[in-house]
Length: 144
Image 1: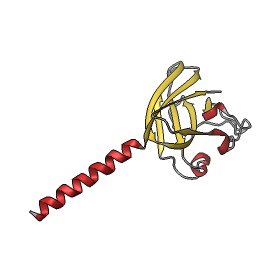
Image 2 (image 1 turned 45 degrees about the vertical axis):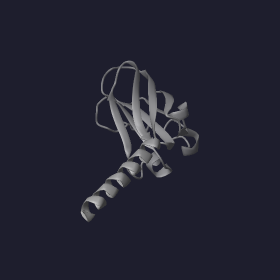
Image 3 (image 1 turned 120 degrees about the vertical axis):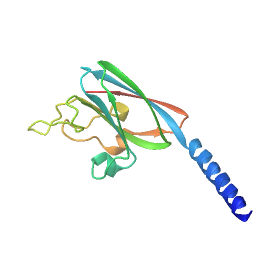
Image 4 (image 1 turned 30 degrees about the vertical axis):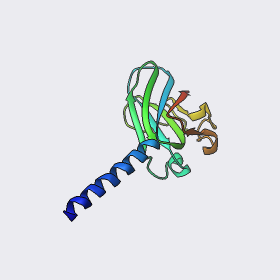
């Protein structure tokens, strides 16, 4: 009898934690524009801190969707919070943004807030941060 009560308490506790976690999630509707071809994938990295943004630690929220000429829209459910979004068109499907000999990207890329740094460097982390705090959040990124 004691064992059954313990199991019931555990299940109720787990259910309440799970329900609370759902309240802390949001949907990001991401629209990626200026896609030149339907070849490859659109790679999306959602960075929660500067180390993830700079690529010094792995990005926990990474997604890809098949490329479609002009525009790709995706719905992504993530925890609410601040994010820096990096997107690129991985035409050759090698999962990295390809660079030329001068260290300039040869595949199209973009960032949240459509903010760009110099051609071969990332923009400042603070300039691309967006707040995903509503039930549904719309983000539009134009590749260049």
